[in-house]
Each structure stands twice: as structure tokens, then as C-alpha cells.
Length: 133
Image (cartoon, rainbow, N blue to C red; front, side):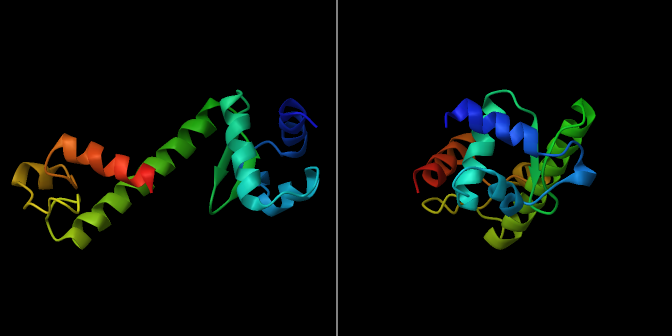
């Protein structure tokens, strides 16, 4: 079965609208070979890159977008989650740079914008370290 066939199966199986979302494991039951949830997530990501408007949320499940408004709502939800994680990390770091090799004291300007790193370069370096691990 080709990737296009799998994407078509995902499109055919998934319900439209957040209220009708199904779990990753439920979706896995419909795919050939019943792949593991990590494989299903990778297939969903591929389908998204291929232009299928598949949305997912850890709390809700997986579904097809009912429209652009629903896509924007999910993006906003993810943005809020990201900001909440950044605030928690700032508390955990105790006002110090999040780059382990730096740990410099953050300036008031950085703290006001709820930043985690003392410079944009350190933010980039930390992202690169996360990606490589």
C-alpha cells in the first residue's frame, strides 16, 4: 500500500469536527497492519504535509478540520500551551538563562517578555541541542 493510499484511508476514516474526534489507537485499527501509535502519528504528520487538514490534540484525539476557524483554534490552543510551558521553565530556571552551558542571570527586559534565554543566539543553540538529542 502506497503512502497516498494510506493518506486516503486516513481521510476516509477520520470524522469531521473536533466533537467527533477519535483516538490514535482507534485510527490505528483502520490502517493496514495496525501500526503502533508513534507510526500513526508519523503518518498523520505526512498527511498534514501532503495537504490533508488533519488536526490532533492530546486531550481530544484526531479529526479532520471542519474549516479554517477550527484550524486557527487549535493553533491558538497550542500557542497557549507553549507559553504556559515557557512560564514554568522560567520559574524552574530561577531567572537564569535556559542554556545549560550559560546560566547567566536574565535581564529585566527579558523577564518582562517572559523569555527563557539571555540572547536570541542562546535560544537558537538550545533549540539545536534539543533537536540533536
